[in-house]
Length: 429
Image 1 (cartoon, rainbow, N blue to C red):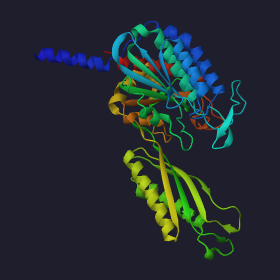
Image 2: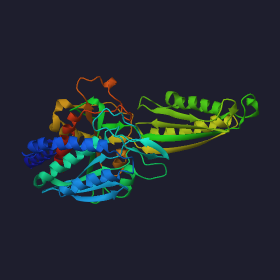
Image 3: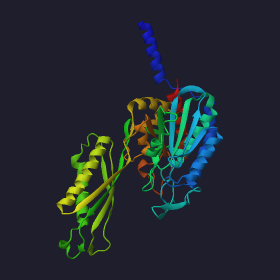
Image 4: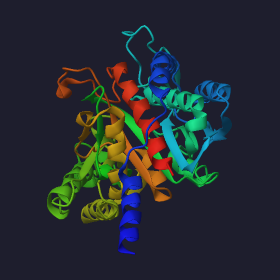
């Protein structure tokens, strides 16, 4: 009896720790695929579209997926695309996600495939550029889909491909992004067992994969504080109630939340005021002043606590001056968390894909991802793909969300390898 128990235990351990062997055809298929992945990335880069406006992008993605025999659904979360591949071997359901939208940034014409696209955002004409790597994410996921479709008889279980719009956030007054994907039930038909996503980073060396177990990326909340005072002539401030002075006091008070009120030994937090708007000329004290900002945390309880403290700080400082403050806060992303149990399985798969020496644990990232919303309903894991040329100083790498953003396309192969390995490892029976 003891011998039988130990044998069963050994089998369980083997199944949960051994890495699935990929089909012998995979290396040759990957080699054939990579020039296409680069070509697709450059196409998407040259033809970017803003959040929830990714109509032509979605059309291109859907056309390619259909050509490989996948079951394709369009219109997900307005402009998203969902595709389903049913493998030839038994297994569960793994989802892979890429984001599709570009940013309102005008790109310099330094690349042969630079964007010249323009559009309208909040009634303002803007340039449009893939300045965060979403073009690469789509190309990598398309490459993964085609390779898996060519190995279909050997693929375990079902693979769901999610091409998500509006990761950067839908236009004001609209719903979109991952929250809408989840709300529409895109992960329920079929029911996804685990979902994976990646993000390319310009300051992580190409060919390298980074990960963080537990909290990996910060939450993101945007806040607006409108200070309501009383206008007067700038020469007679005692006749009014200066909302700009009050806004300055609130600005200082907000910084005390992190430096004096939160226990930063648990995890860091950031509060940033990015804009203060009030008044029209130098000798008129305005009636009101508006502050715009964001705060980032690595703990959902801290996220709620800081929101409450921002509201209380602004309202009470304004009240102490005989004014009022209207505070609104909108959650853009939750903390992106990689559950330790999933990370324990995913990291060996990443190491099997590209080599243990190329997989590194990285610090918290204070940028945010709406991939975090998938984790509210489905087990999830998010990792980082290197896009920096070898030998580059990470501190001098071009930053995301800037016109100078650029990535090394040689790192794309590691992304395809990782996705394929994760499918086989998490769907194996």
